[in-house]
Length: 296
Image 1 (cartoon, rainbow, N blue to C red):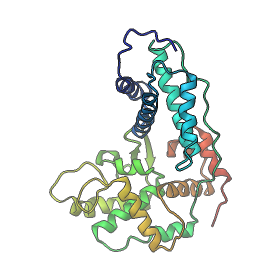
Image 2 (cartoon, rainbow, N blue to C red; image 1 turned 60 degrees about the vertical axis):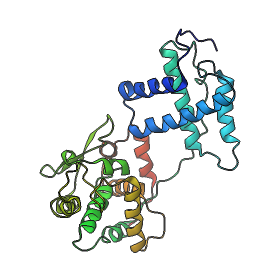
Image 3 (cartoon, rainbow, N blue to C red; image 1 turned 120 degrees about the vertical axis):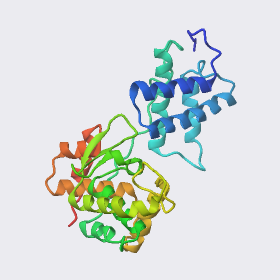
C-alpha cells in the first residue's frame, strides 16, 4: 500500500492515540469501547512488528493474516463477538487513516467478521427475582447498599458500568429519575420506581454515610472501605446473594437487566419506551425480549 502522508515517521502508538482521540471527540464512543479498541490495536501492532510491516504499509493480505492467526489459536480460540469487534476496529482505524490522508485506501474495508449466533438473554422468573431482592437483610450499611444495588440493576435496567459510575448529581430522588451512561455521550434519564427509590434513599441517608465516613466521595456505590465500588466487587455482591437465594445458574448484572426488560414487556410496556430506558441504539436489540418466554 502506498502512503500519501509525508509524516510516515509517526510511530504506531502515535497513530493509535490519534485514532482513539478521534473516537472520543468526533464519534463519542464509550470509554469501554475505546479501551477495547486500544487493546485490539496494540495486539495488531505487535503482529505487524513481528513481520516487519508498518501500519501504513499494511495491505489487505496483512490485515487478513492477523485475523486468520487469531482463528488458528486452538488453545484460546476467540469468540465470534470478539472477532467481529476486532474486525470493526481495524476497519475503523484504517478508515480514519484514509480520511486523514495517511493512506490511499482502507485495506480492511471489505473484511467482515463471523456471524453472531442469536442467543436468548437469560432472564429470571418473578419468583426468582423476588428471592434475590430479599437477600440483603438487616440494617447494616453493606446490606442497605446491596439492596440499593439490586434495585438499581433490576428496576432501572442499568448496566454494571452505569451502576458503578453513578454519582450524587446523577440521582434526583425528588423527581424519581437518574441519569445513566454518565461516561458516554448518550446520557439518558431513567425513571426510578418506588421500591428502588426507597432502597436508594435509605442507603444514601444512612448506610453510605457510615461507609464513607469523613471522606468526600462522588460515587453513589462504595465498598466496605468507603471507596468506589468496582465492577468486580459488584459481580461478587450479586453472586453472593444469588447463592444465598438458592439460584444455581450463573447470575450477573446482565441477568438483572434482561429480567427488567422481560418483565416490563410482560406487564404491557411499549418496545420504544423500553428501548429508550435501556439505552439501545438499535431497536432490534430490544426486540430480542419479545421472543422470550414470560415466566410467572
